[in-house]
Image 1 (cartoon, rainbow, N blue to C red):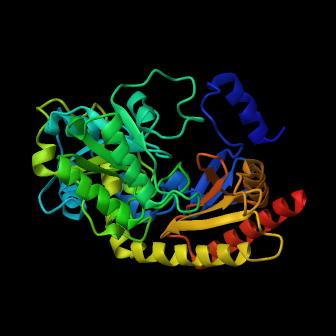
Image 2 (cartoon, helix red, strand yellow):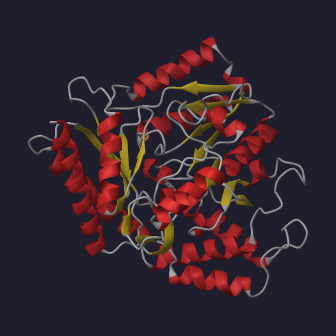
Length: 430
């Protein structure tokens, strides 16, 4: 029995089946490559779901963590605070797209960041309602699930959910939902379901992650900003997946030219170590009473050291520019592939920076989702040595998230594996 099969047997006997996994059991990883317990090499186009933007085990990050580990690994910031947390907060305050005067709090996961952003918004506005969007993903906690606009697998069987969470359609050009349609639906929501003066915040992903890498049009985000200003609502930008240089800017919302009131970030923030942040305008972030925010492991010293190193790497290696280059390469190649004879099941290619996806359909006229083909491509890629992830509310989108530190040769090799996998899966169904 292979080492992977043995581990799979042990996993089935020890781990709750609700924790979904793949059959790739990692042994070691370096930059954009991963080797499993049987020695098979993979090129990683998932990056731990956009966590390893700076690659696996970046030397500068590993050095920073090692140096911190030699000093202390945990004190709890509430008990014995430390300079590195303050330093990271200062740096995030300076770069957050929320204006010149900001404050930061650190927690551990993206869901925690979202929940704390909602708490802060409610404390500041003295309102309780929150508006989120169809296709959104904001975490697996009870409030995170309530905000999420995708039922399977995240919300199924887990209700009831917290009250006063409202959903509106997210623009989707490919599926015929225009910016005007989405804004009209918001107007209807405010006329029929909830007074806008009861809404504390609108939370939006500048690029939807689990929803299918749907990019929020700049006009839509500008309209949300105007609507929020009109009714005294806060605008929360959930940058958990789109942040930290992934889209070609430090934060995805920067492409729209507007500012949010609060920004949540996680994933790529600490290069593989668990850390998230909530950054917002000082007067808003100061609304919560002392002791109302935080957590035992919030702002863990090892993760904070990693995050400070991540910010250095992004700047030193110009990873925003690299994301733009990677994304341009992948989208050009995907569009060329889609234009070939027999590739009519590639219905759409989209993305921002190195946050790229393509949608699989039964045909380009009906645009009916082809979830089976999507799964077959992911499986074929895995056999070929390429790690891919699917997403989308119809389970028919493949997302490409290579580390931003990937070299051109490895990127080309990964693309060749992807191309072969798509061609083979499409040929198999005719």
